[in-house]
Length: 124
Length: 124
Image 1 (cartoon, each protein chain N blue to C red):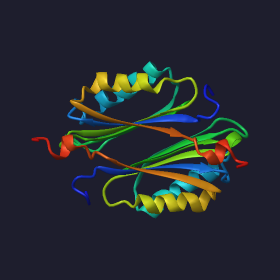
Image 2: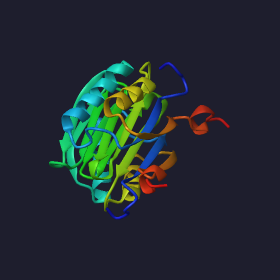
Image 3: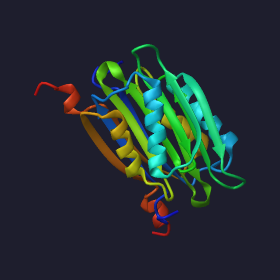
Image 4: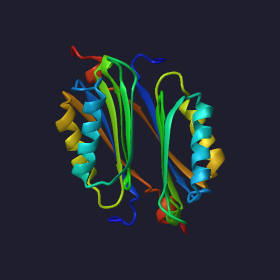
């Protein structure tokens, strides 16, 4: 671990009005590009297309946690999660997602996981 | 969708000092119990154990989004994500996770995904 008190950084990206939200090939390419950009190791991949014109669900399981996406093309919306521990670079993954899917608008929420005082200061 | 403005509710659960964090069978059973409790449909499952005494990574891909877990048994820590859209009941899934893994302490963060004003009020 780079940060002894940080099992992981979790980026929640809400994407609006991007491209390829109904195309599983575009979605899988975007997630794999994100993993490469972050320097993460893919353990396995799963993608599901809910039908022509419908949404895509996909997950890359990483040695460093995971990247997931769920798309709602009928709403122009996609929810991406980038959760990485160790030496991986989640911000580079987020940039790769934006480059691949070109959303008009992004809302990014950053959550540090495993930071409770309960864990850091168990004796207090 | 139940809520026309809500593609999904995302529960981030940080669990401290639970059981089975190094046991992939316990972890998979916990996630499957959570999916059942929520009334969610499992599309596929992937679990990876990083070795004896080490952590487990697991994801259930759902018709309603996903449930994931990453454990760090050496820190007594596990990060669970429950992301569900539609009629599924993510709070019931969270309760099932607690019942299965019995953490001494839980930190729960609730994030509504896809709620940007950008999407709700595009003309403003």
